[in-house]
Image (cartoon, rainbow, N blue to C red; front, side, top):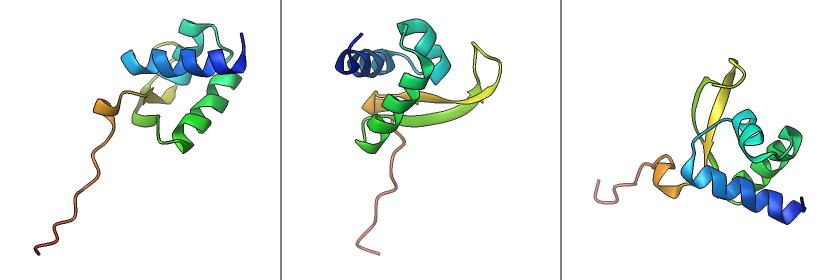
Length: 83
């Protein structure tokens, strides 16, 4: 699987699934070390966020749940200029 294809596969999967990196690797077939690298790249580009920490359904360990769905991104507090 090409790098570009792996990144796109991860991005698209996280658009409709909020899961951990281990769960992404299991579902997509992309090795976890590669998932972690693409996670970093997508975070730096502002296209992926960690939405909550919880127990991974696959490993049973504490992990961050990830998404690329902008509707699930945490809202930044807005400044009130009138105050």
